[in-house]
Length: 108
Image 1 (cartoon, rainbow, N blue to C red):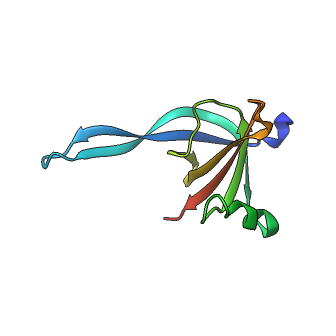
Image 2: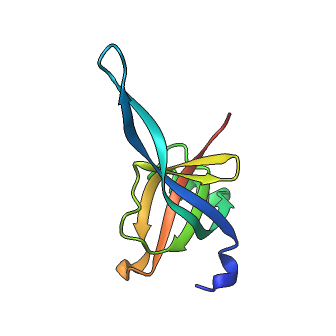
């Protein structure tokens, strides 16, 4: 992977319980785990879109980044004002070098 292809920077966020509501329920908010993670974000098209939707029914984008052991499908990526829910995480070639994420963009 060439560093120049990782031209986007995102924040990796995870839902954390921040308080208890008066009715006793948990109040969850998205907390930033990792800031300024370099990655490549590309929209899925054609055959790639068909293959991705076998793993994530509404996948819209593929995100490629350097390997990080704590990235999982319960998290989201914040790219500026845009939010991408992670639906599937693939450790490319099982070499702990590159992660490919299938994501769904959350529309406002």
